[in-house]
Image 1 (spheres, rainbow, N blue to C red):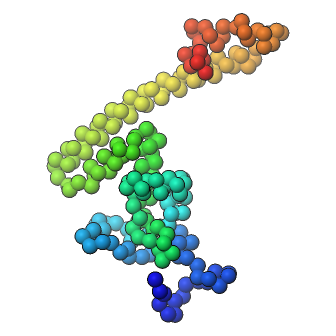
Image 2 (image 1 turned 60 degrees about the horizontal axis):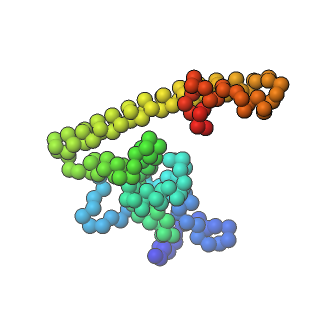
Length: 193
């Protein structure tokens, strides 16, 4: 791709042209295939892969993975071939990362995102509502389990404190006959960790 004469692109110290991708954001009008329109209200601001990584607190590899899974997509490429993303893709990436942290599979995330992409109608709204309600119930179950495990781990810490402050003069020999960690009253996780 040639540059227009009289271009005011900054030069790098070695005299070569610097890539626009070094900037955190770039104003541009992305070229889209015919028939594919930008959603109303979307941003004209494009951001680099680095901005996606920094904004979502993730890695370039993760961004490329989610792009390969078609959960996010680049709006266009710079003249240097680097991907540029709509600002809205950063918010979508953050949501995807949060969903993954809560145990959602790639397929479940794809299903959620696809439900939003369907044409708006009463039926699609009801389908999305049902899908979200199902996931809310799953999250409630996971939250209850996490809360219970948190209590168990806290109890284990208290139990381990007894071991850490043990002053039995026999030292390690005393541990072999001690039932603090193996008694029926010890937290379940202590018997297996």
